[in-house]
Amino acid sequence: MNILITGCNGQLGNEMQLLEKLHPEHTYFNTDVQELDITNQVAIDQFVTEHKIDGIVNCAAYTAVDKAEENQNLCEKLNALAPAYLAAAVEKQGGWFVQISTDYVFDGTKHTPYVETDPTCPNSVYGTTKLAGEQAAMTHCKRTMIIRTAWLYSTFGNNFVKTMIRLGKEKQELGVIFDQIGTPTYARDLAVAIFAAIEKGIQPGVYHFSNEGVISWYDFTKAIHRIAGISTCKVRPLHTAEYPTPANRPHFSVLDKTKIKQTYGIEVPYWEESLRECIDQLV
Image 1 (tube, helix red, strand yellow):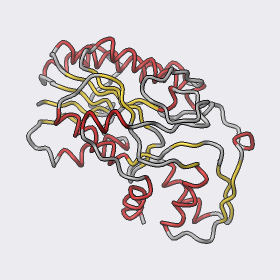
Image 2 (cartoon, one colour; image 1 turned 135 degrees about the vertical axis):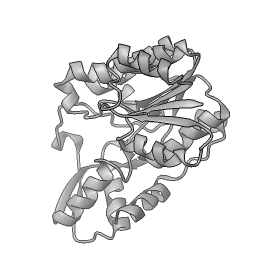
Image 3 (cartoon, helix red, strand yellow; image 1 turned 30 degrees about the vertical axis):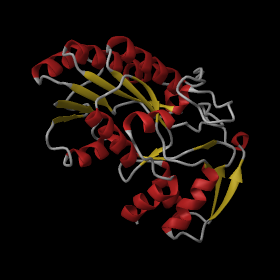
Image 4 (cartoon, helix red, strand yellow; image 1 turned 90 degrees about the vertical axis):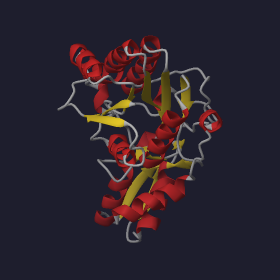
């Protein structure tokens, strides 16, 4: 197959590129904004037609959650319009589309893991635009797979794990939110799951994927420091109210992964195992 990967310079895009070597039977077109402007419908149509694209994995997004509150137009273009253009273009080729979405489509008021059929209720610009992107993708391409993920980190780009390692080395004390509960996702594991879906054949619908387990940001930070060998920084728990941010964040966004595991035969690693794997490469 000819497969287009957008957002190739991001965390997930970079992990996808590493795994492409394990699947050499396909031809890959790795693009970021320099190679393909995904907010330009004409450019997308030309690219997809010219390269006879069979499938698209859209790893590109506007992910600056707090900045999104001020930059709603750009956020809508990247998170809602672009998936519509990409899905429509690959539909003309009779192809499939994988759209990466987020736990922010939920408001976080539930107390048991979210399943794919739970009502969505985003309460931030980021979450609202990502939900619009889901709906646009499914409207414009029949073979669309939506994968909602959460708390993404990797060895690439800027992310929570890297920030906590840096701050742990720089500071003697650190306050971290303890009343927001979810599950981290190692981008490598998500990339493995995407390739598993591609190899088995894309089954349209909405799926949830994160690592296994449940944790708070505070506990996550304690684990990051322990694994990275940082012992000089005291981490103390903060209430969300003590650390106000422009965007609202879900207090509980644990995702139930039963559907993706059963549909594609995927085994999902425990969050701490994946965190160790990532930190081993960072420190």
